[in-house]
Image (cartoon, rainbow, N blue to C red; front, side):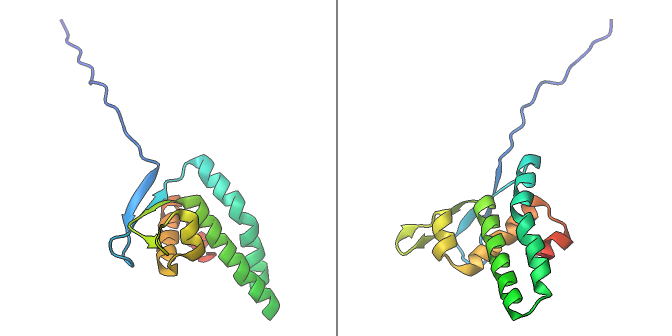
Length: 132
């Protein structure tokens, strides 16, 4: 008689965020959302108009280039609002650093670090990364 052994069922655990230790502010940790297909589509739709406008304006005069800088900053905010889930170990003006407070008043170098982590988590290509 043949013996059949079936593998025991194993469960898999998946976290929708990835925690990172800040390299610019020791003791600070932040969570970046992992993107699903649906979330990546949502993010692409949110930044598409800003990206297209940014490309067009960069070739223009000084006023257009100022507008392009504004579009770049707005796209960065979209990335942070979409992808930064939580911050720990940081207070701003005596208050725990919630995401919106960090975007409004937080240290810019930490936010740039978070944007880089968000881009990595979304799997953007090198060309897509150059736009922001």
